[in-house]
Image (cartoon, rainbow, N blue to C red; front, top):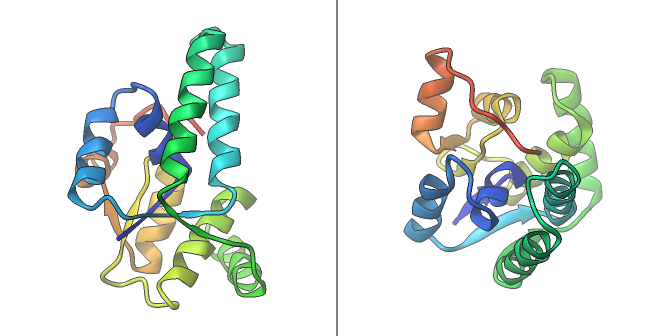
Amino acid sequence: MKFWDASAIVPLCITQPLTKVVHGIAREDNSIVVWWGSVIECHSAFARLWRDGFLSSEEEEDVRATLSLLSSAWVEMKPCEEIREITGRLLLNHPLRAADSLQLAAAITWTDKKPNGHSFVCLDLKLGEAARKEGFTILPTQFQANKKNGRKRQQIK
């Protein structure tokens, strides 16, 4: 079971440069854990792609349907006081936006505050780095290797 950030869920729904990579990760272990707000973040990404002309109305509806199918099978971490408390600490220790810190706090809560040995699937550079510093193994590993080599990937979030 792996924790998935919204940045890695989007390419499960729509073809992007790292779609094959994230599909491979999902096939290895189809048990996905996400933050409660991930669906909202994905809807935001899809709407932005539609508004910017990268998706037609029909394509945007299709990716929402794909997301709905995915979400019917994953485990969702719901908001709670523990996640809120961890989020406050993460915002002090890492350069994260509120939504990203909530996702990372949900992942930490999912691991019972012991992220070592757990995987965090993420295509967002800042969030991935914060998750790594918190003790997670970041997937995809080649994405992190490209980041370390100074190459940047386009992120949709």
